[in-house]
Image: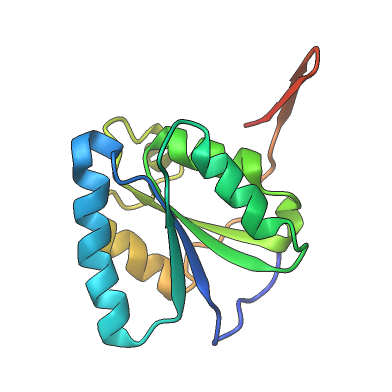
Length: 145
């Protein structure tokens, strides 16, 4: 999302939906977490507990108006919630590790469906694409897509 190079000493902020695809999200996260720890990667993680929680987590992370690299791990709903929770999209680079059942977002952007391959792409800062984000308003409700 942001148009800049990521610093080498970046802290990855993971928003994980452990319930994605009947628990696949949790299994993928546990494998990835071990890899991150083994490689000494600086990260923190927040796991979602209910529908809409990924949005709230993204709001909390980005409320400081600083630059962040957020990685959503879950399905299409998780990545949609994260996008809708980001306070200032120009200050966020968003990575995505698909663990959902549909993964329409992944298919449309030709992203890898294998979680480990997706992580490697994020870690290399490869495949970074600036994206337009649409906003839909209906009465008082406002949503990004």
